[in-house]
Amino acid sequence: MEVRLLGALHVLTADGRTVAVTRRKHRQLLALLCLTPGLGVSVDRLVRGLWNGREPRSARGNVKTYVCDLRVLLGPEVTIEPVPQGYRVEGADVDAVRFAALADAGRRALEGGRHEEAARELAGALALWTGPALDGLGDGIDPLGMAAARLTCRRLSAVHDHVEALLALRRLDEAVAHLLAALADEPLRERLWAQLMLALYRDGRRAEALDAYRGARAVIAESQGLDPGRELTALHARILADDPSLG
Image (cartoon, rainbow, N blue to C red; front, side, top):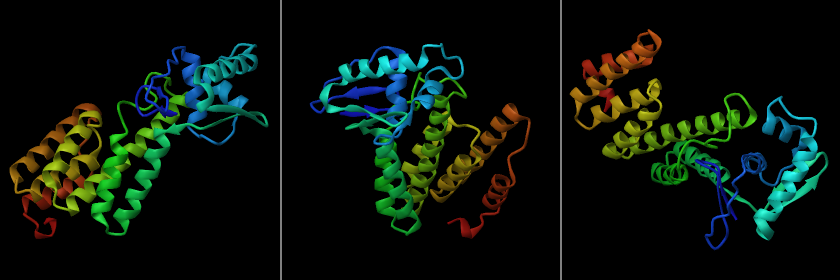
């Protein structure tokens, strides 16, 4: 059974049927268990994840009830087993786990100079995302919100690695497209702007690279009242000077 966490929570049986997990607490509990499939999650952690310090007196009993409900909803393909002090989910194919494995493989390939392999693995990792991680399940600094933030940071690292592989392969139009999409979600990430400037410059689009710097400076100034950092400013100066090492 496939459990998707990289977007709105979605559960699919082996033959492609959607399993309707509609109650919010059921969805949150399933997400908490599936963040670490095959590993035990304590009841205390589940309580924190479900109520974030505002749990009712019946919280531990409620967790047990929700586990029973999920077992009925999920059927035999996925099991939720008791472990000391908690529960463990078995049989779930979780997209977040596959993402991490592909992203790690892509990073290793990139570090080893195997750029085609890196681009392929990282493209596969990023293709698993359909929206914000754990969409609608977390709330800021609660455990699910923090898990979503960690997944989002890993996704951004995978975007950076993917672009590095594309730049090495001179697949510059593709790199620019990925960077523009990423900047739509993360406009204050200076490394994304730097990669965009470099991709444009290497593609013979020097004026657009300089425009990108002006765009970055405007966004950062409006949001933070600051100038771009030293690395982005230095890259801008190198582009102005047509530094041959940028090629």
